[in-house]
Length: 101
Image: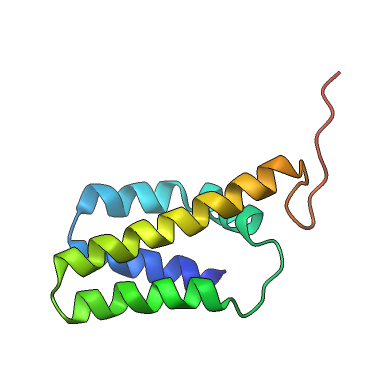
């Protein structure tokens, strides 16, 4: 998870957007929790690796169109995983639901 988060931080750095870098720093804990919800068990994930490779290749090739397609594929994958995690009503691994009385 940490490596994945660092990948995203690197993308923000490459983009040169200081505001986005600050947002990433401020939301790091929330982002990590969301990542754990999307993939609660750390494992080799071919689908995720494929979209990350596509993003990296697009950047190396200086291809904004390919980068946009790769980012959309990445976000679609993440949205499906978050929806599945939310639908299951399961807390992230290692956490228990909070009861409000």
